[in-house]
Image 1: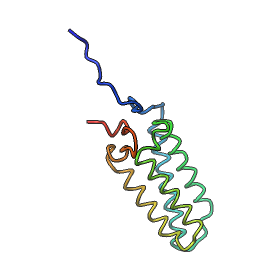
Image 2 (image 1 turned 90 degrees about the vertical axis):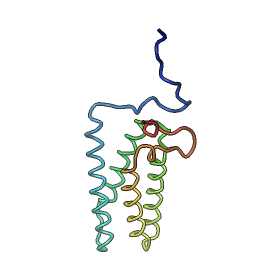
Image 3 (image 1 turned 180 degrees about the horizontal axis):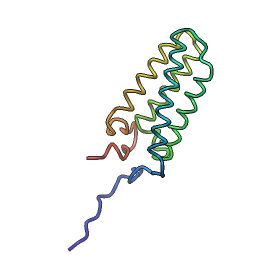
Image 4 (image 1 turned 180 degrees about the vertical axis):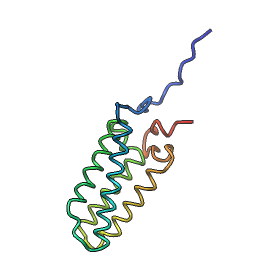
Length: 140
């Protein structure tokens, strides 16, 4: 009998995302904190109040999520739709900071984009804009 082997993967497709102990708990904590910081930043913008340190905390929690994604998927993460959406959200936040009259619409757009992509199926989140898709996009 010939042993079965897995079909060859296209070049650049990782076998699976890298993991570490406590990763799920850390990701849940970072995402929850990130949503809370977004709510406080958006709330301050809605009411014309001083946002204080909430925007900085928003950036730091977002950077933590990005760092984890880069660890999990390497530089390939930037090819995935989820990585491109993060870059778009950063662009919206930068535009809103540079043009105060656009701050509120930019924050709303970033919040909506984040909610949509984070709840999209893996085949959508990890669809590649170029090259092979990510490991979640290939699950059956």
